[in-house]
Length: 262
Ligand SMILES: NC(=O)c1ccc[n+]([C@@H]2O[C@H](COP(=O)([O-])OP(=O)(O)OC[C@H]3O[C@@H](n4cnc5c(N)ncnc54)[C@H](O)[C@@H]3O)[C@@H](O)[C@H]2O)c1
Image (cartoon, rainbow, N blue to C red; front, side):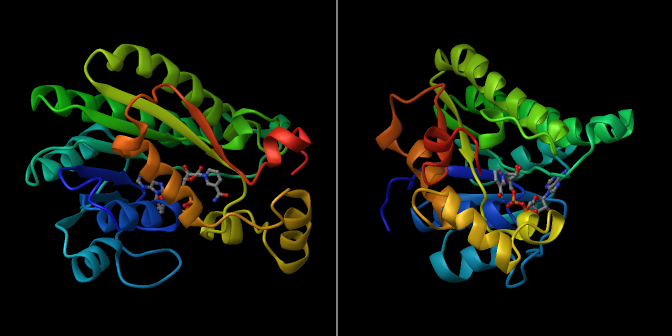
């Protein structure tokens, strides 16, 4: 535990579950007040809602806001909640969905759904947070959730890969636009992380495939939400005060050593 984020207010989209939950808890552990912006407050993996756990364990201010990141008004509601704590200074655009897909069968509706959440949600989340930071005269940090799929093609997830590549490119453009406002913007790119998304939505982590992924990863383990949270903590903290426009992998070395063989 440090006081790195003692003067910060973090908004974490998709903060109820998985990576977002670990990020929210870690922000609070290091001194931030936190707004959890999610479709629902209950962790997909079970347990106490994130905002309540923050209040109980870290004695930080925390609130849950019902928010669909595909809706700009909902993102504004999250910013308004952060105003109650002094205004957002850390924006974590984490919410996202995935689906395995067959490219040749993808419909316009399928495409729009993933883009609305994974791309539009990040774009307008960054916009709402940046406007609030500028209005409050605060410098800040925005961290956008991409994926290793922005670097390596996966034929069974063309839609998802397209959305995460857009987040990577958007982040670089935002780093250029917002740097002059004192706002740093970076993206993180996890490989397989053990969450409900990989366990349930994709069913990728049964015993056999989990062992297979482990063997393909140089560090010989599956990533955990805390690995993601610690990376976000670094990027949001003063330790990263000259890091802007970076695309940081959190993947145990799988992308750079195996050319996407995971
Ligand atoms: N798990 C992985 O292997 C992995 C790898 C790379 C990147 N990611 C990214 O990490 C992020 C979080 O994934 P996760 O594994 O924690 O998933 P998860 O399904 O465990 O949790 C996602 C959370 O986001 C919320 N959410 C979904 N749609 C939303 C919306 N429209 N508005 C607001 N909240 C919404 C859900 O309610 C849930 O609480 C996603 O952007 C995902 O693409 C995950």
